[in-house]
Image (cartoon, rainbow, N blue to C red):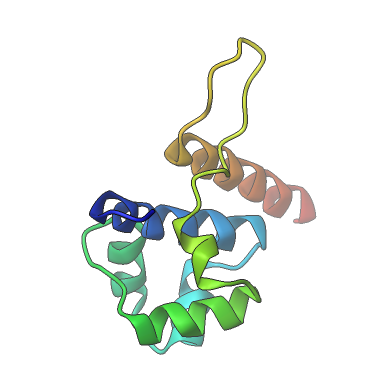
Amino acid sequence: MYNEGDLQKIGANIRLMRAIRGIGQSEMAKALGISQTHMSNIEHNRASANLRLLLKAANVFQCSLDDFLQVSFAAGNSNGSSYSLEEICGLLEKVQSKKESAAV
């Protein structure tokens, strides 16, 4: 079942899903009708997303609302431990920046 702790995963999962799809934070904020600052605050758990915003995000990502509560994004590494959502997001940002640098 769900608990209040699950709400803290929403921002990190939105950030991860956005990074996986190659959507910039400003672009996502525009699609949701919010400022880039508010988008950052949601992703870093400094602000919570209301249901209307989550519905818009689900439509952008073409996913279900349950996907924002999942914790199964963490993948095991070679020594059997799991990466945190923050570590995965950081790695994805580095990959995206390398791709952008290579395209120049």
